[in-house]
Image 1: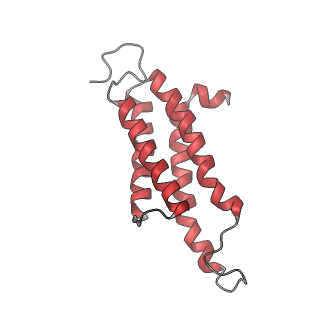
Image 2: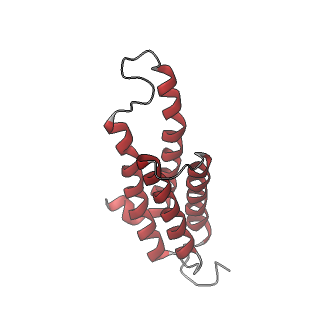
Image 3: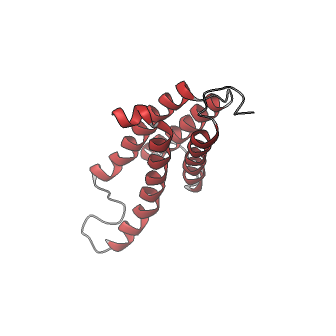
Length: 131
């Protein structure tokens, strides 16, 4: 937990990238197990819970990042992207609305890029470094 508090943008970017990998690998795993007796749509509970683990890690990372960022617009953008990603993941689990899977990828990639941008350009001692 200490590393999350010291390098929240690095952890947030890593969590977002791992989330993307998880989302990309899931269909491949189901395709590979087409002959299993449970069928293609049956996913193990532990595999489905990984989404929420990434959301939790991302929440902590964004919380810590917003405490240290020097760019005023970074806070609402990070929280907005996290909220959208949370909604998309929860929606995917309860099937409330039909939403394209690509929105999950776009949101996660945007969140990772924003963490990297914040880490590179918005973690300064003075307020002049982020315009």
